[in-house]
Image 1 (cartoon, rainbow, N blue to C red):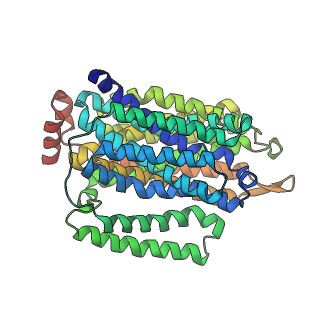
Image 2 (spheres, rainbow, N blue to C red):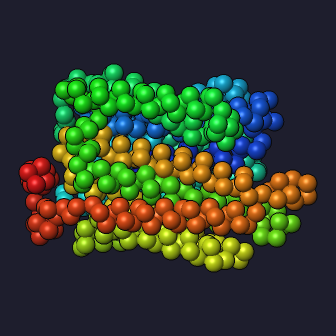
Image 3 (cartoon, rainbow, N blue to C red):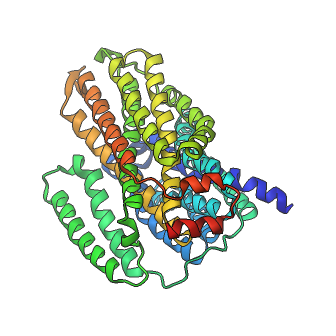
Length: 481
């Protein structure tokens, strides 16, 4: 039985990552109908997405640090439990206030991926870690690609609460499997939890992401948005000073400032921006009415199916990305992945009217995302001590989230400034969509440059030659490098 649990640990953790991504996307098909279903305004309904984004961004580094200190399995189970409880609350209510609070609970699931990656590093032998981490990283795209069409089918043919009952059941299964199959990692970094740092980081991130996500609605020059950005700068400045002076900080800024850690974080932010532009712009473009001259007028279900090949590709290519990293190093994999994302946008700019070319371009972007996302945690794992892997990967995931939020705001700003009247309604022009593609592609090129700037791992060649070493020996070599 113990051997069976060990064999199933990787797929169980991957299932948890897929669930996390599904939970984040299932509400998207509901957004147009939720004002009618809940009796709330459209602006209030939008908080069902914003609340998940904010709580996920805040809790990911906090829960990562808690996992390093108190046990990664324990915190992983808590994150999956909060995700499941949030889904259950959504299933039993139509009150918009409760729905927003429930979606905030679901945001805790964003910590599942960094915690799982850290568990894999602690528990697996070095020769299995690369492929397992690559699979875990790709679950973000796989879950998003699966969640959208499945949720759209449920919404189209059943009561909307059924969707949340289904995700509640899946969450309960994932929680039970994780409790059964995942062992607690013995690697800990004891100390006192930095509560002041956690509160400061949470306040700063809320100001930043709230300003970014609501800028288009409230007005970028409004007092509220400007006040949020000023507050973010002040809070994060004080937080930075506090972290530098604290003996056991929430985020080790000295470690994070090293080029082998800082550059992967920058690359994560840029890759998150470039990746999110693909699904965000594709979904809007193919659903645009045919009267625009470029739109295909597809339903939300058909739109999800257009993105499905990319999700399947991410699942199939995760072992390939691990082999590239093993042979050439994760730095090369990251650079190759971001270059392929840029190539995908070149295809999108060349032709955005034929459905097969749209699917091809989106799938090429997904291939690049698979390579890039699989390389980022490997770079972090090789650059930080074993006792800080969950918190460091939590910061890396946070940077991806910030990149996605900035991409959403930037795309919205571009499309708002490039509209034309179609049937009396303002709709984005094809030129606006092409500018959005060009913007995301340019960011992918910058991410490629950042990847190539990452210093080579001084222990990587030795690690590949002696892949049979234990994880403890590998950590000693890396810490001494």
